[in-house]
Amino acid sequence: MKHFLLMAFFLASMNVLAADPVIVAHRMGAGERDENTLEALKECASLGLKFFETDIHITKDDQLIVTHDGNLQRRCGADVNVEEMTLEEIRKYKTKEGNPLPTLKELLAFLKDKGIAMQLEVKAPPTLGRLKKLVEVMVKELKEAEFTGDDLLVISFCPDALRLTREAEDSIKTGLLCGGSDEKNIQTAKENGCSWISAELLTTTRSFADKAHKEGFKLALWTIRADRDFVLAKDLEGDAIVTDFPEKYSKK
Image (cartoon, rainbow, N blue to C red; front, side):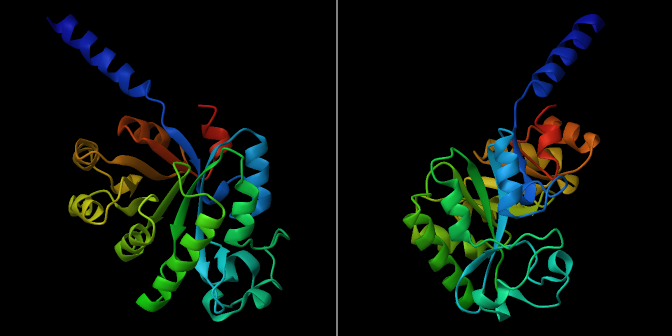
């Protein structure tokens, strides 16, 4: 009997480890490349990587810029805010590695017919009015680029961003960014029409992961930077593993 139980546990463990989650390049592979740049995307795509995550902010003149930080100090060495500048003003800055900050239009132009999937994180502006404008511009550009299908997932910590996106174009899939210890987040995702939940790995409990899957959500886990985190994400049966080191973990 003891031998049977041990064998059953072993087989169950093998089933979990055999799961094949999607490896998503966080900020286009921030641990291996110049984060959130077209150069990083092109290099990773040339290696055969197909799944990416990036971030967008809105400028003063309603252009969408691909960058994680709303302030350019960390990336460009300039203490200026994206939302307070025009696109022309932002064009003067480059990353410390010498690359420009791309626009969403430039990103979508590169993605066309490449078979690449993108998680697009909406960074919410300080007011609802500006958020509405961001979503309006984003959806317009996505439609023009014909990039609203299964290769796109719009994600945000802000439920209003997800609700507004779905109201503007219900074919766009959305995912709630959140911590994975509060199961109320599952209800929030449901209320806002999400099909994914993107949860912080280190706060995600087994109960949360199991309930999210039971409720029919796909589960992305972020941000994986170490082998132990990669193992944990697979053990929690994440459907997507969001990592700064996609080249490394795509080979695991």
